[in-house]
Image 1 (cartoon, one colour):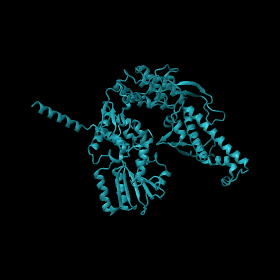
Image 2 (cartoon, helix red, strand yellow):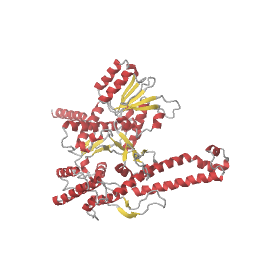
Image 3 (cartoon, helix red, strand yellow):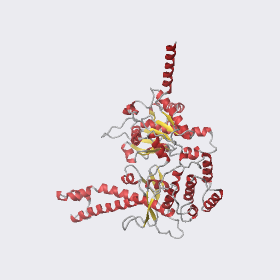
Image 4 (cartoon, helix red, strand yellow):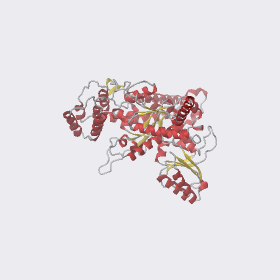
Length: 592
């Protein structure tokens, strides 16, 4: 439920949210392109929610170019800077409002531009107004805006609803047996608010489809109502004027498909084999940033000394990283091979520059001497001018060498290639070459969590649940392997409740084709020792969500989607009622 997908229009959302943020940082005035003037220097104050929204979209350099000299958390200790304007970007919570009122009373900044991630209520707005009056700072509050940016864009075609407190809107939170109606309403309202903000920023009104009798239907009903209410108020509608532009006259509209996670529980448990999915699964990867602990090597600490702390390094895997964009969906062995090829290409270019410098007799001299060379050194000049590009290439190679090495360590220590292949066979109903009990009992294969994930996939995908005798054997093996059996208890209840035993989810024939073991994938001297890792080739998968989206986009009749509800917020029910009423009046007049 925390991820959402729409049609081709969603590809614009990253640029649109980024543009909205830049406009906000420019005091809610569209920034002028190719402006040569100095920006107005200002301070950015955000909470954790605002920080999560900004960090994947704007780098520190881009913030500096927008005139942001400091970016500080709202609830940190901040000194007064009385001659600088402050741009706030926060959620309209009680805690945040109180702190902003405190800033007004303390006269921290020259002027205040208050921007709220979601719409602020009238009562909280009055609290700010009263604080401004009490602090004699009414003239300093320059602007107050609702930004409707309560979602996090990670890629051109992918966004998440939240990062802070995400467990509060998680699958577990929605499916807790002891959840109250009030808690469920709060969760649904949180999801609806983020989706509403997404479509306001996109500047498009979606057609909504959802499964019946699930949390997805609750979200759809609430979102449809919220969109209708906004469209009804033509004067204050967020979907008219500049927000829509030429799009309001377009026949292209996004399709929002809301699907309950219960239709496919096996896929999120499945071990993966592509680069991006592996990074997300085995490393500390959040908001396009991966955090690694650098190995300290074999050097031991002196006796009695404290062990050396591992250095932590962070890497951003962004849209500007060409290697990441090209290979994030590739099988891992292909990625390792591509890193090695990039490294060899870089070394060849570097050697060429050194060779030319040696020929020209300027070995070891500074770069200033190179620019003074005459026309007959054009080749060298060209090579040297490409040095910034070479340095960037080297940075990306180092980055992906470190990330891929960290992923490879997990693959080899946990035998993730074996898990991936085995789970694919289970999900495609193929013949297994090793018993599940042997996989679970193998002390060298995987962590307790890996073993539990494997067994849950088997249990979910089976047409018929294992007998009580077999189940007890599996539970004993899982317990001996150190597994927590709580997830199994939940899945047992879930499967019995949804009667999945008679209608298991179909995943098609997706068994990966093994190409034997990789004694080495790359040339001699590779930094990746891939010995013992299977070289698996991925096949096209036909997951339940893929089939559902295909049926709804193509308007195909299919038992999976025939009962999906349809909402079109543009079809205002009030107008339909008036037309029917007029027709009935005319009919009565004719009959009389």
